[in-house]
Image (cartoon, rainbow, N blue to C red):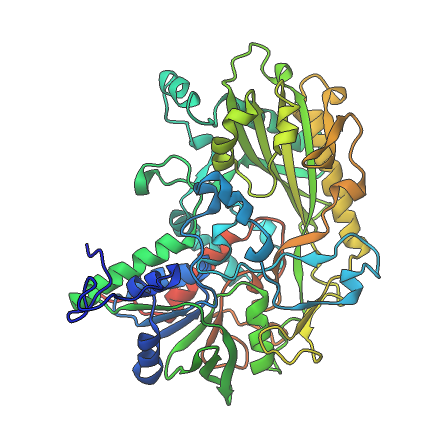
Length: 580
């Protein structure tokens, strides 16, 4: 392996010192990404079969499936951001937790005053943004990957449901999905005892909580489904690590290296990646995308198929500017959130005192407010931590959720308790005509000139009320063996507050920011759908959509695994499979 960036005639400080201003981005360009000179050649001379905008999980899924089908497929991936994190932040040293939020999230749209100022009432004020770096949100996601049932895909075209179901196994394989009760399931008692001395285990607590939740559908109104949390965290087959959250950067770089080697061996085409390059506008003539205006010059598309894989809202802006007759952005959905933290005495769940010092559990709980057009789910994380300060680093790595985690203040005051952290997600009514992501004539920047508006309806209030009440029911009637009076709730900020038996008020538990936006480019078989059943943008010859924008209805289930399943189906449609 070379240890110096050098050329034949200018090497190792001879005859003069070499460049003295290396950066992380320059190093990555030297090894993996297109340099300025290579980008110039790609623009002036390159020809591609697929141009993928976005380097997140969906972009990875399309590229990996396309190259598996046809190693000579010529692919260019364009990413607006630079290289930031090589891995999911939970897999990195503890200080990286501080990268969550702040400048790691950007909002390429404007919010309407109605939403931002709450002029129509309700709790929702904003929508979580994009992560503008290589790998996108995959470095900062919670990694929950439930399989939606056919009932939960209410409102979806039958063909799309079938395509998703046909690719679920492969999607779970790419994301390394494992159930929480499988993390330590193959260990003997002796091994578990040893493992418990060095890291958290998904053991007795997981089993107790999972077993108690079997009664939830019969006990709590609206609940119909419970299971051990499916998490994108199984790296045992990759590098022997028992719990490692999935992120796209390493997978994309590995794919790039594989294709580079195949290109040298003439068994495949190189996989080109351009970072720090913002696509500002799609150039189109007569319904065909012919080029891309970027922050680094214009790219001619030639005969390439263009895949928009940059989340939900940024591609909608690109479509609105390039194809104004397409009904993009007229429909919008997302998940509104309640955050509820509770605890019960550990002895109630572990009367024999068998729990090890640090035990974790995670379960997925599905419910409806009466029908599958008003879905919600509870992401339940459980923690029994006798020595929270000592265990802080390992607990962070193994916690099942990114945001819904117990704080050090909560844990230090609960060393004799099991703490339950509930992230409760409900689907926003996509039928509300007041909601939308529409062109903003007050902004002349083609990458941000869209306006997002969300107004809560009575239907949303019904769903939100139902999911909150179901969460209290699960905590008090199912998870507390000695009854509701043993449950205490946290009131205050994560770092300052108190435990009381009073349930948190609506204002305390309801979060003002939404997640999992969708439906702006929903898929369908009629002219009102912006995207056809073949994932092609209506009114365009060579533009294809992947990701949550395709969702006809939001449901409540976490969308990433289904996104990958449909991204695989898209690649199958675009790239013929070669023999041998």
